[in-house]
Amino acid sequence: MEAQPCTVLDPSGDLRLSTDAQDFVVSSKVMCLASPFWQAMFDPQGPWAKQSLGILTLPEDDPNALSIILRIAHLKFSDLPDAIVIYQDLLQLAVLCDKYDTVQLVRPWIFKWRATLQAQAEGCCPKGGEGYEGYETWLFIAWTFGDEAVFRKISRSLVLTSTVTTVNGKKWLVNAQGVLVGDPMPLESVDAIIKARSERISALLQTCYKLVDQYESTTLTAPGNTTICTRGQSPCDSLVYGCLIKGLQSLKLFPKRAQVSEVELSVTALADKLRSLKCFTYPERYEPHSRCGFTLAFADQIMTIINQKEPSGVLEAHLAHIDEQNK
Image (cartoon, rainbow, N blue to C red; front, side, top):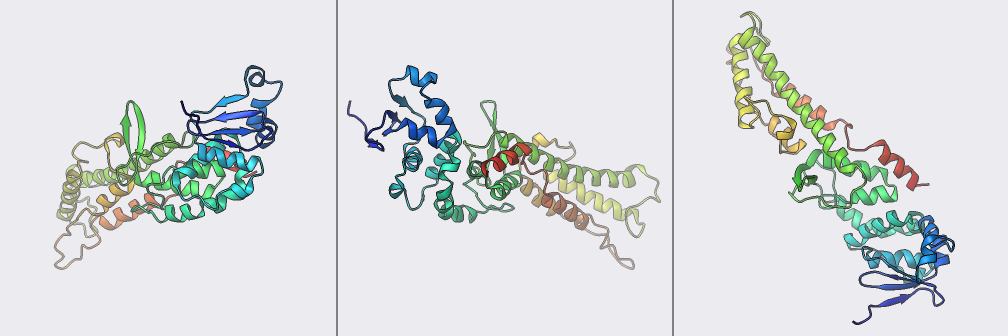
């Protein structure tokens, strides 16, 4: 079997790191200085050092990302890339920085390396979102490198524009283009985003059914002199109620009142469909009824739900981690 390429970062190195595609000869002392994770692992008195033969196999590590971290640790700055232009390379760098606790090591370069890709990602904006469509795993990059503003932006965008699917018993987010949002994602972020999405869907449904209840109370059960119509005309209420019911039926939200788990649309898609419901007004003749329809008040309530900052899918644990990464 032909030997795979080997990069010697320290000619006097006492440790060989082996990925699936690339080997590296490094100094264990340098590794200990570069990361507390490696310091604990390669401590001369530690269990690994006593049992190993100086070779560490890392089959899951991306060789390009590992090469960048190791070159910085061994002061090979002239061998570093001027930019990272492939998204997966940046994502894998974040994965290894999180795994080996080397964020501080790469921090002087990360802003420059991510600038081009970030501008590209921010320009990919789904309707109702805030960019990063197709780059949803940038949430992990922001979480790793301590970018709270971007973390909040992507999380909120996913709350508003994503849907949810279940694969082999596990819930996954699906972006606005119908593409599954895969790993890596920050700890608990998917569950938090799904929960925040459910809460907003619930708020939209409650807005619908509260309105239904109001009109049912006047058109079906209340005395004839009880109306919502600003002119006191019960036929106006009946017309508005009929329009509302017909519209909700077209969205399969009535007569059976939908549960959150039954709504397959995203928050913004459901909001758009609710805002598009038509409501005819009672013939005016001598008294105007333009304010009797539900559409204006409905639209205002829906916009309030969409624009509210919380729930956003951002947990205190996420913010604490981001704060720690910035120290």
